[in-house]
Every structure is written in structure tokens, then in C-alpha cells.
Amino acid sequence: MKQGSLIKSILKWLNHYFIFFLLVAFVITCCTMLFVSTLRDTLGLTLTGENISAAAKLTFWNVALLSFIFTLIDAIRRKVTIERPVKNIIEAAEKIIEGDFSVRIKPQSRVGADETFNRVIECFNKMAEELGGVETLRTDFIANVSHEMKTPLAVMQNYGKLLQAPSLTDEQRIEYAEGVAEGARRMADMMTNILKLNRLENQRIYPQAKDFDLGEQLCECLLQYESAWE
Image 1 (cartoon, rainbow, N blue to C red):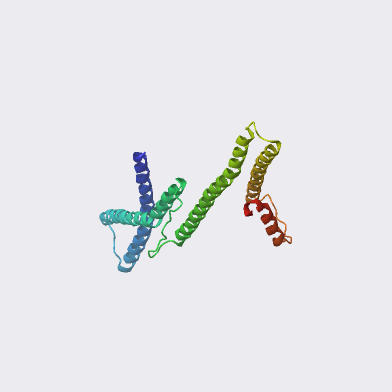
Image 2 (image 1 turned 135 degrees about the horizontal axis):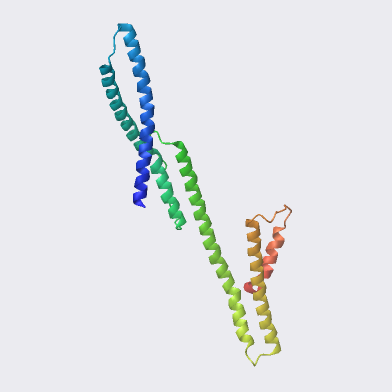
């Protein structure tokens, strides 16, 4: 895999070098021809084949050297301005995939930094923060639901054990059966509320605004917990 990556890097570098070579060769050839033509017409010089051959060889090596320098500068520029920020983003994304939502990427603060990458980094950090908040809410939700479910389950289990006693009176049996029914009702209400939350999260419930009596709701809550108050 490393060998294949190395070959791709070399081919990419040669491709950039070839492009710069053609560009530099075109520019230098045009400028040289214009300069030589103007110099010949102005001074009346006569160019021999030997002079042209020597000038062509010198020009070729100049083009090759300049192309190498431009390719090296372009490679360094790409490494600093493109590859390094992309590598940081990829590494941070891999950490998020593994479940680490605390990862953050520092924006580029150097001179000449691409503002597009800073915008991407800003959006990435905000996404990581939102995912971390969602993960916290999910963990708290599971913990709270588990805690709330344990209470009615424990009540139902205790009343179920009491119902197994052979010496119970009819009144006790009815009382314990009502306790089991009350625990089952609380479980059913909890499941109904969870389903409502799921529908609301998926935007399948469209709320309609209407007046609400908060005092009546508080009174109902007090009546529901009347046994606890007593």
C-alpha cells in the first residue's frame, strides 16, 4: 500500500513538473524569439547554426531548472495550504467516528491562509459540538428512562410476590392487584411518552397552539402524587 502511494506521489509530481515545463518553455521561447528578432533587426546581426544550437541548449536547461524550482515551490505550497488542513480534518473525523466528540480543529492563523478551510473547520467544530451534545442527551435519556422504569417494575415485582402468598384476604389480594395494575399503567404511560418524543423528533407531530391552564395541570400533578404527599 505504501509503495502504491509512493508511485502515485511520484507520478503526480512528474505531472506537475511536465505542466510547468511546458508553460515555462512556451513563455521563455516566445520571449527569446522576440528578443532575438528585435536584436537582429536593430543591430543587423547574423545568427549561425552554432549560435542557435548553443542558445537552444542553454534555454532548455534554464527551462528545466525553472520548472523544477516552480514544481518544488508548488509542492511546498500544496503541502502547507491544502494537504495539512485536509489531513487534520480527516484525523479529526476519524476520531469522531470512534466516538470521541471532544475533538476540535484549530483554525489556520498564518498569513495567506485559505478562508475556505477556516470556514470548513468552523463548521466541523460546530458539528462535533452538536454531536457531543446529542450524545450527552442520549446518555442522560437512557439513564433517566432506566431509572424511571425500575420503580414501577420493582413495585410490580413486589406485589407479584405478595400475591403468591396463600393466606391473603380478598381485600389484600385486590389491593396488591391494583398495585400491579398501577405499575403497568405507569409503564404504559412512559412508553406512550417515548413514542410521542420519537414522533416529535421525526416531525410527524404538527403542534397546534391553544390556551393551556397551568393551574389545572399543577392540581392534577398534586392529586397524582397524593399518596407520596401523605
